[in-house]
Length: 393
Ligand code: SOE
Image 1 (cartoon, rainbow, N blue to C red):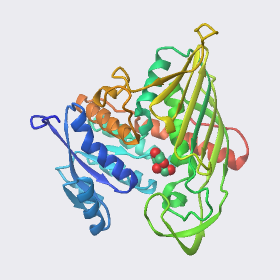
Image 2: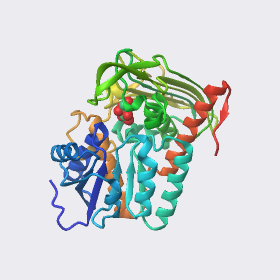
Image 3: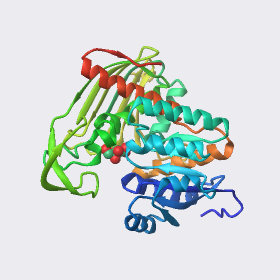
Image 4: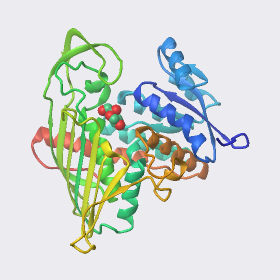
């Protein structure tokens, strides 16, 4: 444990306290204990509309106080950063107001529900940057050590020029037609379905690892189950079913072909209907000198093929990314002791706090969030028009 008393504080208010709020809370609590941060984060206020529920969550997750209106929080002088963990329909309003009020912002993904909202958010982030106010989008998987290692290898030229990117995000939590409705199946709240919720992660990783952007897409969206039982309780991802039924207004699955600006070809897929695949965020990149492959269901491992090796022994190496030389790992356990889903959220806090202290912009920026939104939008348009779509620059 590190003594933070002599460090400047970073007073955090978090809006929302469900699955993502719990993951972020864990990270705000843990990162300062395991990493030597330049600022001391304080879990000052948890924000939610229902006073009783937010008070219980604050007690449980470790927040010092509560508010029931985010607008009051952004007016407060004792808050430095707003962490947005609400459904997508509120991201733009909260983030823009917070940035204008001079608060740093961490915003969950997808950054917005539409390109228009994302453009306004990126503009607000640009104006805030001029005043030293920072913003970041929660594409957390970038901070899984095996993924950060893959990025390092690509940058070192170890796989050469990228030809192919295959990225999939496969889940199965609504494959059963009896699984009830939740806000994630409501276009109004979530913007889109598998496409924005998990396809956005696959797309972000594809662009992050290659250091390149998608310029053109041909996509297809499907909703396999158009109507579902109304959830009687919002527990976990899918709640508990009642006898009443309501419409699903988002896609259950999305897939698209992508052309990258430097010519690489991408095949991307996101689905909540892949029975047996629980959180299979997979990516494989093939280059002129080798290949890399990752599957979140085996998240401590990165597979690496070096085409320069003698062919009699060449093969994918299974690199267990738990050595102190691997990104982020030195802060944790001895080699081989494995990290989990939550650790990437702690790494997100480490990088965000370090950037704020250093006076530089953290990544992924709101500009990157906007670019992802533009690709997602192009996929939707392509699916509707059954034609390739150019992604606006
Ligand atoms: C639900 O599909 C979800 O929680 C996503 O919203 C997260 O971003 C992803 O990390 C896990 O799955």
